[in-house]
Image 1 (cartoon, rainbow, N blue to C red):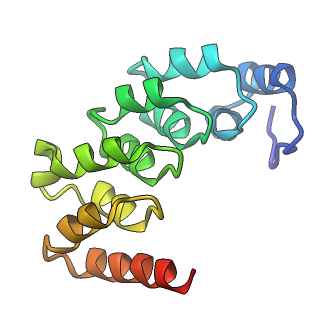
Image 2: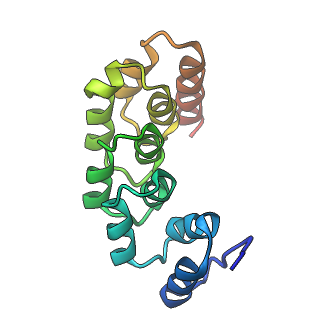
Length: 150
């Protein structure tokens, strides 16, 4: 089943069918949908099969704190970056991600996501911006500028 768009009003049952019958690209769209089944998201988040699917769960605004906490330490930086970019990720998780050993290893995907998340605490933005990575600094500056305009 090849689907280009999923209706914002799609039901959980429709999303389950799309997930079961779709290819990986369709499954990613279903996992990112706010109405996706929690059980499927949990199963995917705990699997090691496809990091793109775990990243899709981490990107879902309704993933829940428990799933985001499990994914914040994923071995794949794309998954951790999706957690850091998710506006529903609690600030204490964002702060912890900025202080983690992986963050010290110049994990650019996560740094960019932390820098761009409008909910990243100011102290964490400063920490990320002071790493000295020029493009990350630019994202931090844009994030701060957008906060000042509000």
